Image (tube, rainbow, N blue to C red; front, top):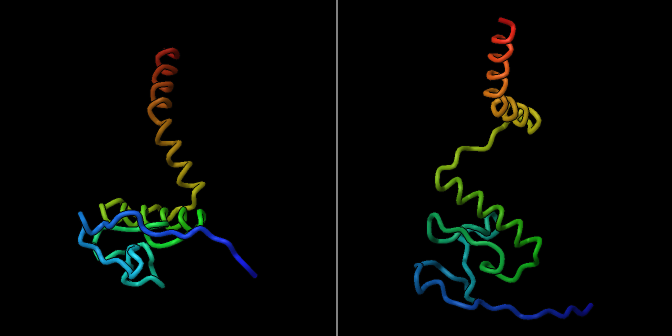
Length: 113
């Protein structure tokens, strides 16, 4: 089996503005690459995709989603709801419609006299 691929190397050294550990090839190094590749040596800084090493698009998108989630949690985002999506959506719709339903009820009461 022969596979042709274009080489990839980091285009810049992030240590110019961030004291972060890099691997021998110049990509962001993760303290635990087997468990979480998005972690870096700097708390609150998460890496994904080509910043971590050569990746295809699918892996880059998955890692980016993980990094974005970890960044949101780091910044204090509330945890995601554990309710099934249908129940969550139903509650959101009810909350959204509540003012309109209340107004329609008032109008109906006024019309009834």
